[in-house]
Image: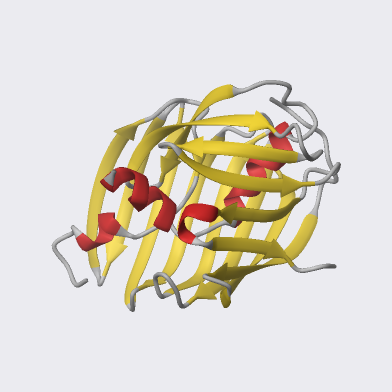
Length: 221
């Protein structure tokens, strides 16, 4: 139950425990947009993102801020992916609950090398994850668009997948297409539902986590 709520609320548990202060789809090659974040019906933040082609794959970059449920400022976040959407590198720079943090993760064949800098102190770790695990950083929602770009319109039945709540832990989840609405994906993580609405171009239009009354909406272009 603890792990379930950690992944859903996107609480930076990993950092609080450190010894310092507290399927291939083809879509438009470049995309920019803004996601509004709502918690219990109140707008609490936003994310500005850019998705663009990069050497042998794609690059997602994000910046933004959020006040609830966890105060967070994203000065810069990036995920570099192969053309098959397998992650190769992750970078985060910003503050979580007022604490300055920087994370660099290099992923190669499921081997993750993390370098984490929190409040001026460095810690390194090595993790082994599934080679095709999706990176879902805590309290950052733009990376869910990797799911809509990879699966929207292509997923015909329920599949079992894996997510790395980087840099904390890996967890299994299931993904299936909705029978009620085109371009909708239903994500089951630890028994809790996450609803992803996309479009025919693979864009992420909205994300909802009913259990914690959290919603993310794309601002119309």
